[in-house]
Length: 201
Image 1 (cartoon, rainbow, N blue to C red):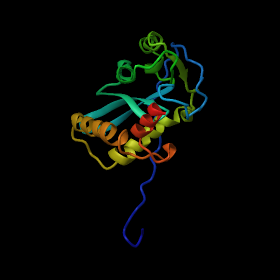
Image 2: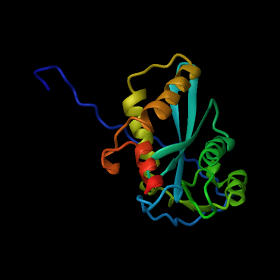
Image 3: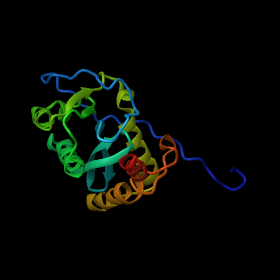
């Protein structure tokens, strides 16, 4: 690599966006790092991150189905309101229409513990699980997705506008990550292929 002028791309440090609200109740960690559910729509995971642009931050919320590591819902905004992860959750529900009893895992951020978000989980028959305080590895799959997105897409980009970043992230998630990117965890299949195999099994 040195002879050819190549340099390895290093992993980023995990970005902390979790701001706890001590006034809100925290759910038990029912997930317990069981990262390989037996079927789709059994365990979803959600998290938030931010992308730098010359206009300011663009906040991204995602909901992943942990069976196939598929991004089933996402939302982007210039601010980080409680509604942002709720928008990602609603997209996931619209796409998957899961049965009651699905476990939804997140960190203890104020968006996830908000009454608005918790009410939405209850209305959809979802079981709430939250990472322990200061334990980012409890939500490692979502954290890993953000690290991968930033390493593969964002690190080499200087986005002029939030809209430019939004378009790039949309294409990464919907065109590349879910449909084309191979995962060693999935036996070098894509999330879409893994989902398809589960449906016909």
